[in-house]
Image 1 (tube, rainbow, N blue to C red):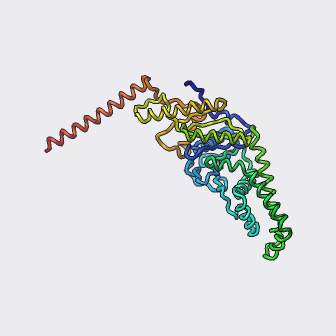
Image 2: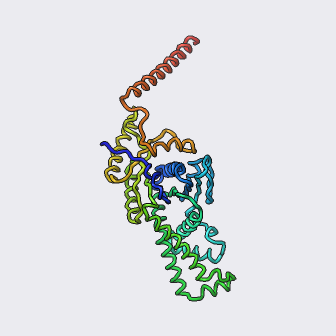
Image 3: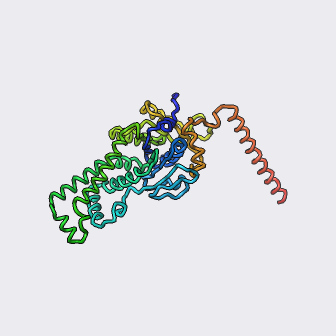
Length: 355
């Protein structure tokens, strides 16, 4: 089946983009793709920030450079910054006030995900004070990413829960906090103010996330059943959250034109092609970019840079099956094997003579 070849050129050309999410199932190469995408964006934008929200934090491995929760300049660049954020918030990241810490931890126990929501709100607040022209998110596997998109709802729940506590206990919270020596910082109004401030930030950003001129989501997958299933789930959820998504990267592809002799690889190619055809059928209005499976890992700025050409130009196998070049290479390989066999034979003969 003849399928059109897509690239990620459309993302580089969309100058209005402010937020680019890269997500998908675990182990499909999201970090490599988001790192390369941020590098390509750095070549056409004044300043780029890449943020890892994956607890595994593979960003440091991809660039072979240690990153923290403070944006650092990526080696070899003047306008590309990276940071790694732990979505599980530490209480001292929210506030140094012990009273507020305890109510925040109470809230996080009451509403699953509210601690992540608040951590995310704090991080977005920080990011918004900086002047980056585009921000790339290297997200955690699909489930976490979908939770991240549900954060505004989690904060709403948190506020509702707190309001019900406030109404039920009246001024008891304030009296108790004063008795314990927390002062007015632990009043209902202080906690409510902090939560509402975060909700405002997250709602403002959420509005931007739903604007296709400002935000897009790139789905990364591999040509296998589970990855196809997960991508379909992700695309459906993104549509539900009204988040634009029109790019899919199919990673680790074995190309049929590749000169391959192995029966195992040929069987794998056949299986992959079945799923690739399904991807094109399901997402006929998407930009689909196919990336080759490589014999080595893509780590370090130089390796990422070399691999980046496949993001803007469709991959073409170096040797096409049945071509003159492929026959020449096979003849050269056979000659090398023949020479090696002759040398081995000579050694055996010499060994016999000595005996």
